Image (cartoon, rainbow, N blue to C red; front, side, top):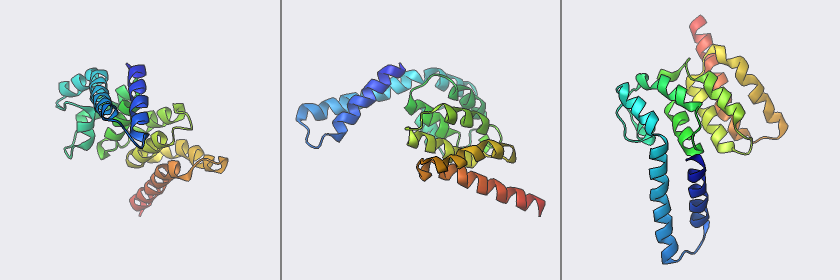
Length: 180
């Protein structure tokens, strides 16, 4: 399933970047878009079933990402599924769904493990993790984040580390406020 989704994404990207498209190419682009959505929903079916079983009733992962409702029951399910073999798009959805206060102190360790598995050329994907860690960090996570921030000296784009940097600063402020 992962390979199929990646292949569809590749074809879709090629069509989107084409400056001039024929009518057939426009129709193909729409067909591929529908096929990607269906493949992503098929891929995440077991995740969605588990979310429904804990009372989080959504029909797609991105519905969860975009909801304003709290879903603390979903956090353990999302953490468990983050380590499974999903396409990059589905993993990104899980990562973004974990960017809630309810995941604070629960998700950072697995997020950092995933971050370290991602190739360095996947900057936006890594940034999404840094952004989520900004929400989920606790004092216990700071030592694991500092080496990532230090890598900035190794010619990586600073944008990737902004989430981690904000996480360190935010957690430092929380610690200072608790002791004051």
